[in-house]
Length: 91
Image 1 (spheres, rainbow, N blue to C red):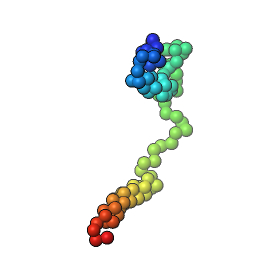
Image 2: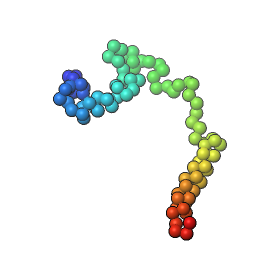
Image 3: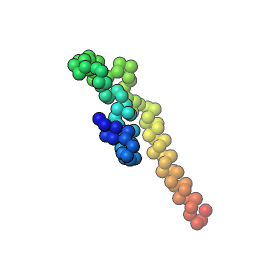
Image 4: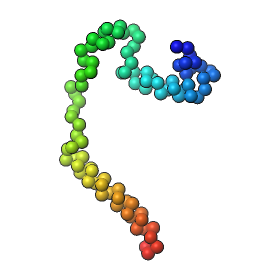
């Protein structure tokens, strides 16, 4: 690619610069196979697509998160009610 297509050109402008900054290769190199690796070797990797063995199961339905749900469900409306209650004329 030419420098202008990649965002490194002088007259490319800010749009091409932001395109190069937010390019997938710039943000996360794990998703891009380097040019030095042959295609067959990258596809034939036995660990490709398998989850990491150190990863744990999601904890969205544990007791801890249910407590967070209850606290959030009561605290956020209460904050709005307090602001409404204080702003009334009778206060």
